[in-house]
Length: 356
Image (cartoon, rainbow, N blue to C red; front, side, top):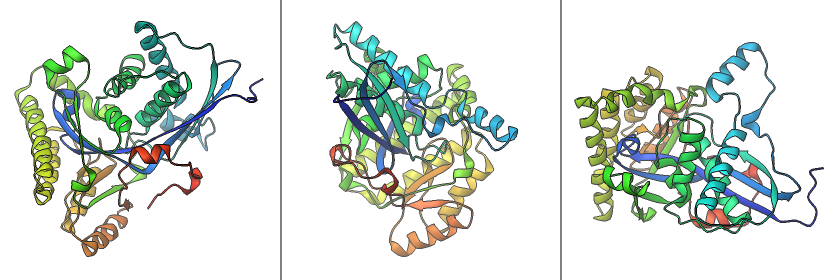
């Protein structure tokens, strides 16, 4: 029933991301500097078929070793896994087309995805599934959506359809790739339903590393609930912190464009120190940052915990960083900043994607 024969097949990819400076202010009308890296990603395939079909992926696994594993899995991932993301993006894409007078060809598809982004450690696996799906839908139905608008569709799919607590940043960088400075000034966002996005030349970035602990999986929205409540209540400490986060990102952007990458490490550290003051940071996550700093590297969260990102000076420092983090169960890598070429180059075996 679901076989495809002599019909179109579309493949797209989206990559892991690291919030480098300014996060989490993207959800609070702030500014952020982020990069996408192709060491990990999502591969999405749409094949023409007689009816719409969404094929379960790894995140939709329904086999468990014990009741305890089932309960933990449901707490972290919910009941619907990745398929709910595919459905939500498809719904929002269809509604966008209807609203903008775009008539879709009468074609159905089967959607399948593969993902090797470590789960729930702050490297944006869920939004990578969403952005890869939107890219595939645009190609499959030959619909052009302005690049600056596309991340908003992904955000609405997660936030409005699925009630996931999230901000613009992840969807922006996974649609744009590379390094992007984002300004979410309130009046502009409310008027345009998006931020201002500026590409930064990746060659301007200092030496980068990313490290993660796969055992630290937790739902990122939980970390934001109390801060969101305080922000909406206009708590002065939280409002001031979000302004400071935004200023850190602005300083980072200005330093890079001025050819002053030596200013970046102090901003990375300041970003985490500020977060540690206003968020209830778990000790296991704090330990990752402090262990990385022992080697002299800078360190902060890449997202909401479970992964860190920072800068290092030379190979000797990187070796010490990798060794110290491995001692507490973390895997460390040098991120390969994603480019448009990574999306359009001939696809390699998913199993052979870079992971070190």
